[in-house]
Image (cartoon, rainbow, N blue to C red; front, side, top):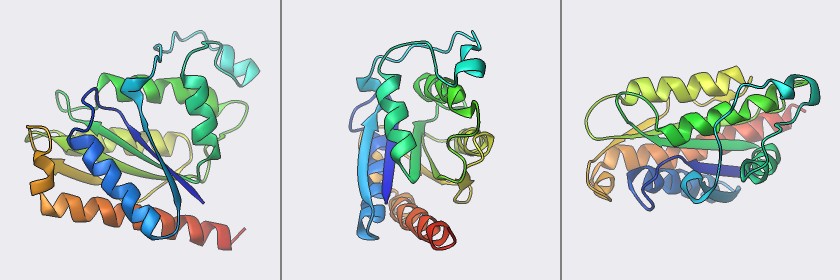
Length: 187
């Protein structure tokens, strides 16, 4: 069983990554193989709306997203974390989400994978960002584990002081594994 953590923050080792790593630690404690991807380390172009994927089932843009497709298709669970920018997800998160549009064709390739949402905010906007991430999961016919986890902090590493968020992130990772096990037992 694999759980993939995807960090959509341009800030390496920042609050979003701290929370995603904590969720992955919870998943690992529960028996999952885990991996972390930083979208900021990759060259991923924006979707150009060509709709080639409607016919081919593949995105025609060749960049680092091809590696990401392989990893998310191989994962049973996906933890998607984003900082909150202007009451929304980061541009990196939106670009990543848009590029997964190709995985909807010819059938929903992410269907029944388990998703967990994480948002790191300075003070406001996490509810909206979590809603966007969960709508992304639902748009792919994935199973979302509740609303998600929000953590607060403006300075790098400050989220570690948000005990509720840290405990919640670890619990989120464990919940994802529980749901994956439940799905697999019914197959």
